[in-house]
Image (tube, rainbow, N blue to C red; front, side, top):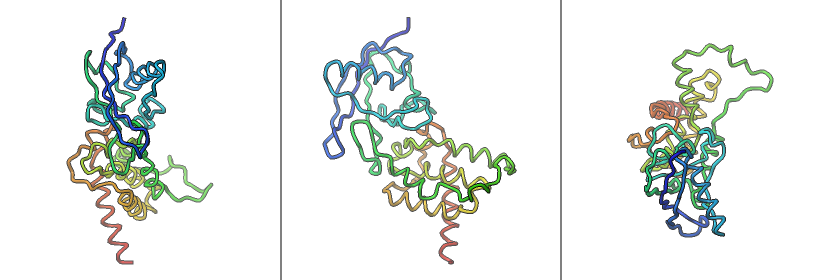
Length: 254
């Protein structure tokens, strides 16, 4: 028989973006240690529904660490203290019986709270829409596998493309900077031949959109890299800064 945990949850509740938020306390009893963190919340919500109470609202989708929806701050750390996992991949065996767990939404000016633990991360969508694409004529694109790419570039592009856009980098940064996210989106195309025609246009558009959305500046303290569930390197930020400086200089000469 699996071990079961009895826990106390301190959960941020907020009825809407206009209303004031508050911390409410809930017991989480008889939680199987093999349950994921989101499954634990499911169990708690089932109990609240039976009692006729409003369940805790939180985002989720794939529950496989791919979609980036499960944006929870657990005991003050985005996705919890375990490295390289999303909230849905965090299992309750990482906690001890009797623990008190604080659960809050990701905090950032550019991520307004929708309800309880759900935040609006559409700012990320607008950044991607501003430049995260390549231009090709339909039907005339060269087969990607026919283009030789140096392994170092392929590996770096793959590392950047692993970004799931969860926003943990923003939530972990004292400035609510989105530099790791944006640099990953800029870098994964910038390392590939298909991304070269729009390279300058892309970095200018995406960085400027990031600033327009109200994200803060990077001060190189690497909380973003530490909190990233895909362990994306902050080296991409330095690369993006170099690309932006070059593109801005070229633009000034036109």
